[in-house]
Length: 279
Image 1: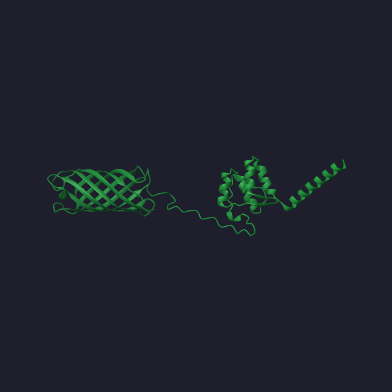
Image 2: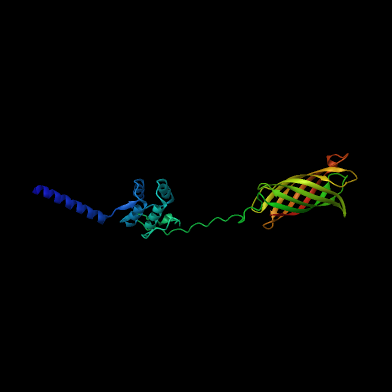
């Protein structure tokens, strides 16, 4: 009976001594122990309370460690509690609706002083705060003037004024009507009503390359011959001077079908400058 009492006393003294040693030495809480608690199904509030009251912590919260914690199923509020404790804060963690980004440099570094957190990177600046200058669903009104230089001696150099409207079906493709009038001196030689299809791929924020083609009919006689068909292909740069106003500089190859004349006698080069209002 005495021997049994002695054994019990020795065990009790050993347990008390072990507890005191553990309390004095402390238990260091690490990332893996937090993961183990989560996988064991420990309630989130209990895990957070454990993090707050741990004697010592050694949390690593660099990006690779954060990825590991998320893949292990650790809730965001637990990660925030780890960051707060690593930074020396033991108060309540912020609510879930207000995300807190903990810089990796704040984590405790064994044997050294943690460096000061770096400033967050500046947000990228978009080329245009209102989006691209041309996009699907926009309209454009164009007004241009040109000099028409015939490819043979049959015709003569003339001027032209054009007015048109276009609708962008995609971010780079538009269709619409165009009305133009050709002048030789002060005399109107022909009036053309055409339909155009235009491509406007974006090169940079304000710079576009415009290319298109049009097919139309004439309502007046030119060079004493009926011309019932006009076909033109054009291309050139478009530069936006303001949000909705652009400058067009284009070259166009024009063909007008005249009775009894070949392609050279019926074609001309157009040098065109105009403005486009896109809205």
